[in-house]
Amino acid sequence: MVDLLLAQSAFPEAMSQHVLAHYLFVSAAMFTIGLVGFLTRRNLIIMFLCTEMMFQAAGIALIAFSRFHLNYEGQTFVIFVLTVAAAEAALALALVVFLFRKRDSLSAEAWAEMKG
Amino acid sequence: MDFIVHPVLLFVALAVCGVGVALSIPRRRFHAGLIGGIIAATGVGILITALGAASLADGSPLPNLFFHGLAIIALGSCLQVITHRRPVYAALYFILSILSTAGLYILLAAEFMAFALVIIYAGAILITYLFVIMLASQSRVEDEEEGISEYDAIGRGPVTATIVSFALLATLTVMMFGGIREISPPGAAQVAQAETVVLQRLPGKVEKALTREGLMNPGESVAGVERTEAGVFATVESADGGTRQVALPETLTPTNTEGLAFNLLGEYPGTIEIAGVILLMAMLGAVVLARKFAQIDEEAKATAAAALAEGRADAIGTLGADVGNGGGATSDG
Image (cartoon, rainbow over all chains, first blue to last red):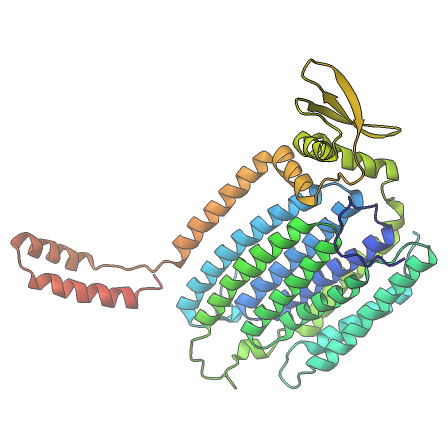
């Protein structure tokens, strides 16, 4: 009943809905943890790290659905998610370095007067 | 809706999780990281057990045993990322969560993406994060205790944030667990079709396999692959134009990388170009944002230019000192 084989040499079999539900739950829980972190942490770098965590959670859901429907679209889109994550990391970290030079602090509240 | 986990049990487990997460977030008076983590793990454990019981009751197979270990490591290290007071450790725990996510990808038969995730995320993006954290942690903040900055030691509104986030999680899981029975897994015919579609694009691989098995003579080539009631057949064309049908060996299956490559490059070639442009723009943007702005005093520049024209070398030395000061003082531009 429990498939202990790690390496799949054959083309994957169909996956049941219950297994899909397990993976989707992990994805949703990881997204929520990332959201809690984004809302509570006050360190700019950790806040961006939490957005990366949410990207990763979306990736798990995409790959689980790709495996469930046995097509490759989900995996292809994870490649694009990785691209966006890399671009975001580059820009966000450059911004953080820029802001850190201005205030000498990584706190998001150092910029609290930036209101609309 | 036909729930696979009873909604009341779901909400209770999520509430337990939420209490654990809210407890473990750093705050001023107390820091119950371990207790919070244990409570949150209990909540996740209740839910995973309920999910497993539901699949056993329906006679559906459980996920691979490694799933449970990897999921616990992934969620646990994610919790550490948002609760650890030292940013460097948070980034290291995030690398751990990426590695276990890559393990989940392997269980989902997405080997290429698993390795791409380790190389791109753990190898490149997180190392950049670590560099920036170490670069920015050199500042001497007055009110830090034991080297931890005040903004890392105290979270902002942990209870509100947790309630809002777990309301979102409750909505997501109710929708998922209620509607998951309405989507059906592909049948055996569709699985076989998915396999054949990839093989149809790989005549070279089919040719190699048939030659190895001795089913094809030199001088013949594979003209196509098709699926019939009896199995998968390759149309083999001989040099004089005659064709015959050869049954493919059972062991001939496309790999994940082959299928993904044909999907990525065959169906979305324009999107790859756009992704390349996005990366290029991000690189340019990062360079523009992170460079230091050295402002040279226009007057000093004019003086130095005049001095240069007169051939006085001593005036240029003064300008050099000015540039040094200007670069340091106005680096925040």
